[in-house]
Length: 237
Image 1 (tube, helix red, strand yellow):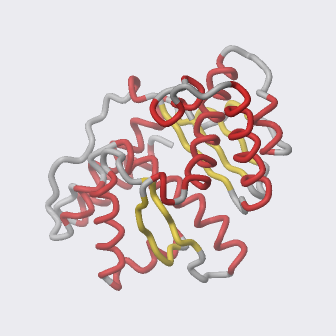
Image 2 (cartoon, one colour; image 1 turned 135 degrees about the vertical axis):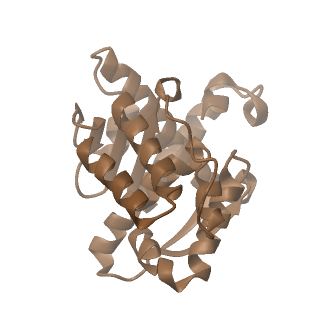
């Protein structure tokens, strides 16, 4: 969406009418086909906790996956999507996730999901995601879907900035979210209508708390180490 608005890469040289047509098509796709929408964000300049780098577990793929912001945020997105789906389906794994290929950290996250699927002991985690399958595709393979995802990421980023400046919600965001408002809360900034849409921007405290928990939990050598990580997670709520 940044490339579209700045007329870069695939959108170089297009005029305003073409941009408007693309935006109208994206909004039409969203309003007709999107059952649920989730976006999470953070300001990485505020991150002081290091990501996990080593693991004392034989499940090395767990730590490898969470060495980047991509996985840390995608984990939360999939958890939220799973909650929406599980409320609708009563326990069935409903979602076939498709990731846009090319993002840093994505191959490790795909390996993480494949590792979960290969081990029955991780079944409950897949249930939380309501995950039936996961794959990655290039943007040109399912362009409309990825442009729709880009649209929400773009609009949510604009909404976070506008909220900081106490500006009203952009019309383009309110049209596709239909109702609800973004409010400062315990985690930072959250928009949710409790039916279809969930957007959250994590503030400095919760961003660092989450990354610390990932690092300490995945690096735990013993059950006592894991308990300590869980206690720290609880104590900092």
